[in-house]
Length: 305
Ligand SMILES: [Zn+2]
Image (tube, rainbow, N blue to C red):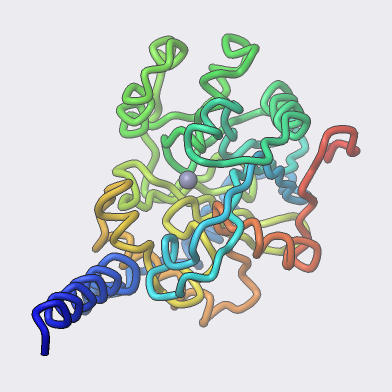
Protein backbone atom coordinates (compact mmCIF):
# COMPACT_ATOMS: atom_id res chain seq x y z
CA UNK A 1 0.00 0.00 0.00
CA UNK A 2 1.37 3.40 -0.91
CA UNK A 3 2.00 6.01 1.68
CA UNK A 4 -0.75 8.05 0.05
CA UNK A 5 -3.28 5.21 0.43
CA UNK A 6 -2.36 4.75 4.09
CA UNK A 7 -2.76 8.46 4.72
CA UNK A 8 -6.12 8.45 2.93
CA UNK A 9 -7.39 5.51 4.98
CA UNK A 10 -6.20 7.16 8.20
CA UNK A 11 -7.98 10.38 7.21
CA UNK A 12 -11.23 8.53 6.46
CA UNK A 13 -11.07 6.76 9.82
CA UNK A 14 -10.57 10.07 11.62
CA UNK A 15 -13.45 11.66 9.69
CA UNK A 16 -15.66 8.65 10.39
CA UNK A 17 -14.90 8.76 14.11
CA UNK A 18 -15.48 12.51 14.20
CA UNK A 19 -18.82 12.10 12.41
CA UNK A 20 -19.85 9.35 14.81
CA UNK A 21 -18.83 11.30 17.89
CA UNK A 22 -20.20 14.67 16.85
CA UNK A 23 -23.45 13.71 15.07
CA UNK A 24 -24.42 10.13 15.93
CA UNK A 25 -23.44 9.35 19.53
CA UNK A 26 -26.40 9.94 21.86
CA UNK A 27 -24.52 9.11 25.04
CA UNK A 28 -23.29 8.89 27.66
CA UNK A 29 -25.24 5.66 27.99
CA UNK A 30 -26.89 4.41 31.17
CA UNK A 31 -28.52 7.68 32.22
CA UNK A 32 -31.83 7.01 33.96
CA UNK A 33 -34.99 8.73 32.68
CA UNK A 34 -36.05 11.70 34.82
CA UNK A 35 -39.46 11.11 36.31
CA UNK A 36 -42.13 13.49 35.07
CA UNK A 37 -45.13 13.08 37.36
CA UNK A 38 -48.23 13.73 35.24
CA UNK A 39 -50.55 13.12 38.19
CA UNK A 40 -48.78 15.90 40.10
CA UNK A 41 -48.93 18.24 37.09
CA UNK A 42 -52.66 17.55 36.75
CA UNK A 43 -53.29 18.18 40.44
CA UNK A 44 -51.31 21.43 40.32
CA UNK A 45 -53.25 22.52 37.20
CA UNK A 46 -56.47 22.14 39.21
CA UNK A 47 -55.21 24.03 42.25
CA UNK A 48 -56.07 27.48 40.88
CA UNK A 49 -59.81 27.82 40.49
CA UNK A 50 -61.12 29.38 37.32
CA UNK A 51 -61.64 28.87 33.65
CA UNK A 52 -58.93 26.88 31.90
CA UNK A 53 -57.39 27.89 28.54
CA UNK A 54 -59.43 27.36 25.38
CA UNK A 55 -56.55 26.60 23.01
CA UNK A 56 -52.96 27.15 21.92
CA UNK A 57 -51.81 29.21 18.93
CA UNK A 58 -48.31 29.50 17.51
CA UNK A 59 -46.43 31.76 15.12
CA UNK A 60 -43.36 30.79 13.11
CA UNK A 61 -41.11 33.84 12.91
CA UNK A 62 -38.18 32.52 10.88
CA UNK A 63 -36.96 29.22 9.50
CA UNK A 64 -33.68 27.51 8.77
CA UNK A 65 -32.60 24.22 7.17
CA UNK A 66 -30.26 22.05 9.23
CA UNK A 67 -29.22 18.39 9.15
CA UNK A 68 -31.58 16.37 11.32
CA UNK A 69 -28.67 14.93 13.32
CA UNK A 70 -27.66 18.38 14.57
CA UNK A 71 -30.79 18.56 16.76
CA UNK A 72 -31.37 14.81 17.29
CA UNK A 73 -28.19 12.74 17.43
CA UNK A 74 -28.07 9.74 15.10
CA UNK A 75 -30.99 10.78 12.88
CA UNK A 76 -28.85 11.37 9.80
CA UNK A 77 -27.96 14.20 7.45
CA UNK A 78 -31.42 14.67 5.94
CA UNK A 79 -32.22 18.39 5.98
CA UNK A 80 -35.11 19.49 8.18
CA UNK A 81 -36.75 22.89 8.56
CA UNK A 82 -36.44 24.33 12.03
CA UNK A 83 -38.32 27.42 13.12
CA UNK A 84 -38.30 30.18 15.69
CA UNK A 85 -41.68 29.64 17.32
CA UNK A 86 -43.71 31.76 19.74
CA UNK A 87 -46.77 30.33 21.48
CA UNK A 88 -49.94 31.84 22.88
CA UNK A 89 -52.05 29.98 25.43
CA UNK A 90 -55.55 31.41 25.02
CA UNK A 91 -56.84 32.21 28.51
CA UNK A 92 -59.93 34.21 29.52
CA UNK A 93 -57.67 37.12 30.60
CA UNK A 94 -55.55 38.12 27.62
CA UNK A 95 -53.53 34.97 27.16
CA UNK A 96 -50.14 33.70 28.22
CA UNK A 97 -47.28 34.08 25.75
CA UNK A 98 -44.59 31.38 25.88
CA UNK A 99 -41.33 32.48 24.22
CA UNK A 100 -41.18 35.73 22.32
CA UNK A 101 -39.28 35.16 19.10
CA UNK A 102 -36.51 37.57 18.18
CA UNK A 103 -35.64 40.51 15.93
CA UNK A 104 -34.82 40.16 12.24
CA UNK A 105 -31.19 41.04 12.93
CA UNK A 106 -30.83 38.34 15.61
CA UNK A 107 -32.56 35.78 13.37
CA UNK A 108 -30.11 36.54 10.59
CA UNK A 109 -27.16 36.33 12.97
CA UNK A 110 -28.31 32.83 13.97
CA UNK A 111 -28.48 31.74 10.32
CA UNK A 112 -32.26 31.89 10.01
CA UNK A 113 -33.99 33.22 6.91
CA UNK A 114 -37.60 33.77 5.79
CA UNK A 115 -38.14 36.18 8.68
CA UNK A 116 -41.85 36.96 8.94
CA UNK A 117 -42.11 40.55 10.18
CA UNK A 118 -45.92 40.37 10.01
CA UNK A 119 -46.02 37.32 12.28
CA UNK A 120 -43.64 39.11 14.65
CA UNK A 121 -46.08 42.04 14.85
CA UNK A 122 -48.83 39.57 15.73
CA UNK A 123 -46.68 38.18 18.55
CA UNK A 124 -45.83 41.74 19.66
CA UNK A 125 -49.60 42.21 19.98
CA UNK A 126 -49.90 38.96 21.93
CA UNK A 127 -47.35 40.36 24.41
CA UNK A 128 -49.16 43.74 24.54
CA UNK A 129 -52.41 42.03 25.49
CA UNK A 130 -51.05 39.16 27.55
CA UNK A 131 -51.75 38.58 31.21
CA UNK A 132 -48.36 36.85 31.53
CA UNK A 133 -45.26 36.26 29.43
CA UNK A 134 -43.17 33.19 30.24
CA UNK A 135 -40.09 31.66 28.71
CA UNK A 136 -38.87 28.09 28.35
CA UNK A 137 -35.35 29.47 28.84
CA UNK A 138 -33.31 32.62 28.43
CA UNK A 139 -31.67 32.13 25.04
CA UNK A 140 -31.92 34.88 22.44
CA UNK A 141 -34.30 32.92 20.17
CA UNK A 142 -36.78 32.64 23.08
CA UNK A 143 -36.44 35.96 24.95
CA UNK A 144 -34.95 38.24 22.25
CA UNK A 145 -38.07 40.01 21.04
CA UNK A 146 -39.35 40.46 24.58
CA UNK A 147 -36.15 42.38 25.39
CA UNK A 148 -36.38 44.33 22.11
CA UNK A 149 -40.17 44.80 22.18
CA UNK A 150 -41.10 48.29 20.92
CA UNK A 151 -43.23 48.81 24.07
CA UNK A 152 -40.93 47.02 26.50
CA UNK A 153 -41.66 49.22 29.52
CA UNK A 154 -45.39 48.52 29.19
CA UNK A 155 -44.98 44.73 29.04
CA UNK A 156 -41.94 44.13 31.26
CA UNK A 157 -43.87 43.64 34.49
CA UNK A 158 -45.94 40.83 32.92
CA UNK A 159 -42.88 38.65 32.35
CA UNK A 160 -42.31 35.83 34.78
CA UNK A 161 -38.54 35.67 35.14
CA UNK A 162 -36.86 33.34 37.59
CA UNK A 163 -33.59 34.38 39.28
CA UNK A 164 -31.76 31.68 37.30
CA UNK A 165 -33.08 33.10 34.05
CA UNK A 166 -31.83 36.59 34.81
CA UNK A 167 -28.22 35.43 34.41
CA UNK A 168 -29.02 34.22 30.90
CA UNK A 169 -30.78 37.49 30.08
CA UNK A 170 -27.90 39.60 31.39
CA UNK A 171 -25.50 37.56 29.24
CA UNK A 172 -27.39 38.80 26.17
CA UNK A 173 -26.30 42.40 26.91
CA UNK A 174 -29.61 43.99 26.05
CA UNK A 175 -30.21 47.47 27.45
CA UNK A 176 -33.74 46.48 28.49
CA UNK A 177 -32.43 43.42 30.32
CA UNK A 178 -30.90 45.76 32.89
CA UNK A 179 -34.36 47.28 33.50
CA UNK A 180 -35.70 43.98 34.86
CA UNK A 181 -35.80 44.49 38.58
CA UNK A 182 -38.06 41.76 39.88
CA UNK A 183 -37.72 38.00 39.56
CA UNK A 184 -39.76 35.23 41.07
CA UNK A 185 -38.69 31.84 42.36
CA UNK A 186 -40.92 29.02 41.21
CA UNK A 187 -41.48 25.67 42.91
CA UNK A 188 -40.37 22.56 40.94
CA UNK A 189 -43.90 22.49 39.57
CA UNK A 190 -46.06 25.56 40.05
CA UNK A 191 -49.38 26.67 38.55
CA UNK A 192 -49.34 30.19 37.08
CA UNK A 193 -52.97 30.15 35.91
CA UNK A 194 -55.85 27.67 35.94
CA UNK A 195 -54.69 24.74 33.82
CA UNK A 196 -51.17 26.12 33.27
CA UNK A 197 -48.20 24.75 35.22
CA UNK A 198 -44.50 25.61 34.93
CA UNK A 199 -42.11 22.72 35.59
CA UNK A 200 -38.42 23.28 36.33
CA UNK A 201 -36.27 21.14 34.00
CA UNK A 202 -32.66 22.33 34.33
CA UNK A 203 -30.29 20.93 31.72
CA UNK A 204 -30.38 22.80 28.41
CA UNK A 205 -29.82 25.84 30.61
CA UNK A 206 -29.70 25.94 34.43
CA UNK A 207 -33.13 27.64 34.44
CA UNK A 208 -34.90 25.74 31.64
CA UNK A 209 -38.60 25.08 32.11
CA UNK A 210 -41.39 23.16 30.45
CA UNK A 211 -45.00 24.35 30.42
CA UNK A 212 -47.85 21.92 31.03
CA UNK A 213 -51.26 23.02 29.77
CA UNK A 214 -54.64 21.43 30.39
CA UNK A 215 -57.36 23.01 28.27
CA UNK A 216 -60.99 23.40 29.28
CA UNK A 217 -61.65 20.58 26.78
CA UNK A 218 -59.37 18.30 28.81
CA UNK A 219 -56.68 18.12 26.12
CA UNK A 220 -53.17 18.21 27.58
CA UNK A 221 -49.91 19.58 26.21
CA UNK A 222 -46.32 19.98 27.35
CA UNK A 223 -44.26 22.72 25.72
CA UNK A 224 -40.84 21.18 26.02
CA UNK A 225 -38.61 24.17 25.24
CA UNK A 226 -35.17 23.25 23.92
CA UNK A 227 -34.97 20.15 26.09
CA UNK A 228 -36.72 18.70 23.03
CA UNK A 229 -36.11 21.07 20.11
CA UNK A 230 -37.52 18.56 17.61
CA UNK A 231 -40.03 15.73 17.96
CA UNK A 232 -37.30 13.12 17.40
CA UNK A 233 -35.88 14.09 20.81
CA UNK A 234 -38.92 12.81 22.73
CA UNK A 235 -39.87 10.15 20.17
CA UNK A 236 -36.45 8.47 20.38
CA UNK A 237 -35.29 9.69 23.81
CA UNK A 238 -32.34 11.25 21.97
CA UNK A 239 -30.59 14.54 22.79
CA UNK A 240 -29.03 17.03 20.39
CA UNK A 241 -25.77 16.10 18.71
CA UNK A 242 -22.52 16.60 20.59
CA UNK A 243 -21.58 19.08 17.86
CA UNK A 244 -24.37 21.36 19.06
CA UNK A 245 -24.73 20.36 22.71
CA UNK A 246 -21.04 20.11 23.62
CA UNK A 247 -19.42 22.63 21.29
CA UNK A 248 -21.74 25.18 19.65
CA UNK A 249 -24.26 25.70 22.49
CA UNK A 250 -23.00 23.84 25.58
CA UNK A 251 -25.55 22.34 27.95
CA UNK A 252 -25.74 19.82 30.79
CA UNK A 253 -25.95 16.85 28.46
CA UNK A 254 -26.58 14.10 31.04
CA UNK A 255 -29.48 16.13 32.47
CA UNK A 256 -30.99 16.70 29.02
CA UNK A 257 -30.66 12.99 28.21
CA UNK A 258 -32.50 12.19 31.45
CA UNK A 259 -35.30 14.58 30.50
CA UNK A 260 -35.73 13.37 26.91
CA UNK A 261 -35.81 9.78 28.16
CA UNK A 262 -38.37 10.87 30.74
CA UNK A 263 -40.49 12.52 28.02
CA UNK A 264 -40.29 9.37 25.90
CA UNK A 265 -41.43 7.22 28.83
CA UNK A 266 -44.24 9.67 29.61
CA UNK A 267 -45.66 9.66 26.08
CA UNK A 268 -45.53 5.87 25.97
CA UNK A 269 -47.60 5.79 29.14
CA UNK A 270 -49.96 8.63 28.12
CA UNK A 271 -50.25 8.61 24.30
CA UNK A 272 -52.94 11.34 24.31
CA UNK A 273 -50.60 13.84 25.99
CA UNK A 274 -49.28 16.17 23.26
CA UNK A 275 -45.64 17.26 23.46
CA UNK A 276 -44.74 20.41 21.55
CA UNK A 277 -41.06 20.69 20.55
CA UNK A 278 -39.65 24.21 20.45
CA UNK A 279 -38.18 24.40 16.92
CA UNK A 280 -39.72 21.64 14.81
CA UNK A 281 -41.37 23.59 11.96
CA UNK A 282 -41.66 20.48 9.75
CA UNK A 283 -43.41 18.51 12.49
CA UNK A 284 -45.77 21.40 13.29
CA UNK A 285 -46.69 21.80 9.62
CA UNK A 286 -47.78 18.15 9.51
CA UNK A 287 -49.35 17.84 12.98
CA UNK A 288 -50.67 21.26 14.10
CA UNK A 289 -54.26 20.91 12.86
CA UNK A 290 -54.85 17.41 14.17
CA UNK A 291 -53.36 18.36 17.54
CA UNK A 292 -55.86 21.23 17.86
CA UNK A 293 -53.25 23.99 17.47
CA UNK A 294 -54.02 27.25 15.72
CA UNK A 295 -51.26 28.35 13.37
CA UNK A 296 -48.89 29.24 12.03
CA UNK A 297 -50.62 32.55 12.77
CA UNK A 298 -49.88 35.31 10.28
CA UNK A 299 -50.65 39.00 10.19
CA UNK A 300 -54.28 39.67 9.31
CA UNK A 301 -55.49 36.40 10.85
CA UNK A 302 -58.28 36.48 13.42
CA UNK A 303 -57.05 36.74 17.03
CA UNK A 304 -57.58 33.86 19.46
CA UNK A 305 -59.63 35.76 22.03
ZN1 LIG B 1 -33.99 27.57 20.98
